[in-house]
Image 1 (cartoon, rainbow, N blue to C red):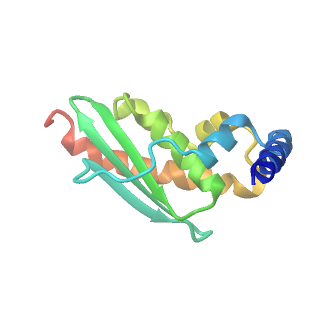
Image 2: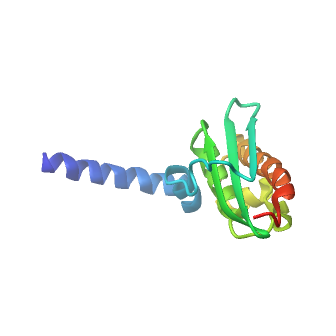
Image 3: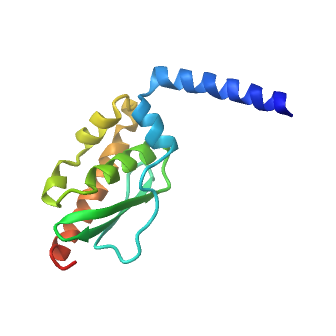
Length: 144
């Protein structure tokens, strides 16, 4: 049994090394270990969009004072959608709503680096959903 575990660890190491040749460390990290995954009860900002690819993204934002205190997401999408949403949510936390205008497809792609061309739409979906949730937050600023 212990021998099988060693073989599994060696194989996973080989898979990881091969993946690092194709994808960036940030893409692998956010796609396999997403940051800010989940939901927020009674968010100040919420959006849900289904993209042309069929992936659905939800963004949840909580405002405290002038800043985004908490940012979470859910998606039924692939690893690339998960990575894009994870980066978008991470980029928003601790910033003011106006500062989050820069959370765009290109900003997300820049952070993730080696996003395959045929999955760049995942970053657009994450950015669009974040921007829609941010618009909903405008009425909550200063109330919390």
